[in-house]
Image (tube, rainbow, N blue to C red):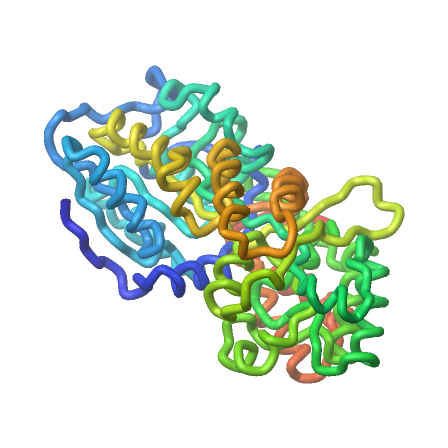
Length: 457
């Protein structure tokens, strides 16, 4: 086995997790069941499992690309499977939407060599380019049994599914929930809000009764994935291989924007990144509530903020009053791809299956909530046994795993980059999010069209 660094962006585990999720920099959009298929520059062809396999080899190493966080997974697999020759390569994992993988695959397609066998990406939208480029193998066409694929959480592999064919496997979920300080809630006599209306009202009350404390943060590029996605804002719905509908002026968008504006104005909604030194120094110890993804618990409260045990609890994301269908957002979660060019498909499938389902890694060591349901059960048991959290976190996280709204897609343009450039900069300049919704609409439209999408409303 050899460990190598092939990209400038390779980071230590904590920082990689931050980058992969703090920018999920391309938690962009592909609609899953409606993205384009085909075989642009690859060997995809009609044979057996839906593509023309390369001549298979029994010698030579299985080449696996991972980011620094998933390096431990590849090393554990190698330790448990010493007979498997492996070439483990670390790269940036496409963190912050770097497009390193796509750039390298484009080069490999031209030179007809160099493709890795298995790749981890921190992005959920890789299928939007990897399928037409002929890079990723169709997994449910004879490579992985359907009974195995059925073990993933409902909708978890939607970003990997193109016209019914599964082209990658989701590593972890990043479903949003409501993190809160249970001790402060009890001390101040507050009730955990079940609706967005109650959430806003509590934020207004906190501004008066406990100024300086916060009920959320809107300072990161993934802010729309926490709030707008959960509110069913139709800013990002892929409707075809190269088609997207964009409507940032619907009620589902405007009411959430107004809620954020209210709390930003009274300073209970932070405009600092949760990963910034400013937030860590001035606000991390003054959190009453913080809507956010499942990884906030370990990465932020335990890791970055060093919040003492017994304080942080989890509740379901608030919902709009009268809405019969609870929905949540999603901030992150990576994917594993098997190369259609691999000459080691059997070994690649074995590694891919192990790394996404094995309790030894996903259930016991993985930093995020596993996308595989059985591994997630073990992961939750381990979280509970740590006695770090106040109360049960299993119920809210398990429920939210099946409530991620499907109307926010996964295509080639980065919603996070668009939000940061359009909305965050505008709010910093003193504008309201409501007033910036038309600009957000125009920016999404322009970015989508530049990537070849037909834009509708």
